[in-house]
Length: 167
View 1: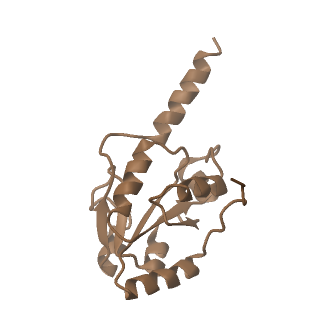
View 2 (view 1 turned 180 degrees about the vertical axis):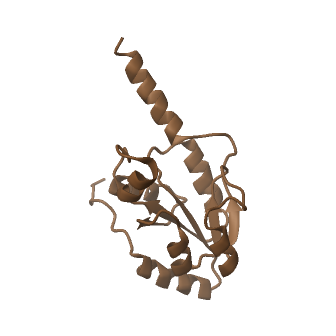
């Protein structure tokens, strides 16, 4: 198998046209989002559950700049193109859309998916964009394994292991 280079990622306008066409044909579109800096089984379970809610799963992926704004310097550990390529390698993810904003409001307004999927660390009332979902008639689906899986915890464990080896 040969490597063809990193995937070409669509623009929000391109995806908006695709979503409108799919919805016109009666298909359900699901939109999820996140940083996905260190993929773990919690991410996979979230993505699989989200995909089961519709015919197409789009993941809005925080850009490197938005991750730094949210989580601070030194983040992300994995650059955008590699995170996108990993996500697109999963059978449950159909499209990846990079986004710079700190919330998903503009993307929700542009794409108007049927379902807005969030992980189990949220409830429908704590989703930051819930007011936009309600305004646009978008269903909020809490997806994934309620067990606590965390990229931050993984990173902290790696740091602790590295520090332990320096004694």
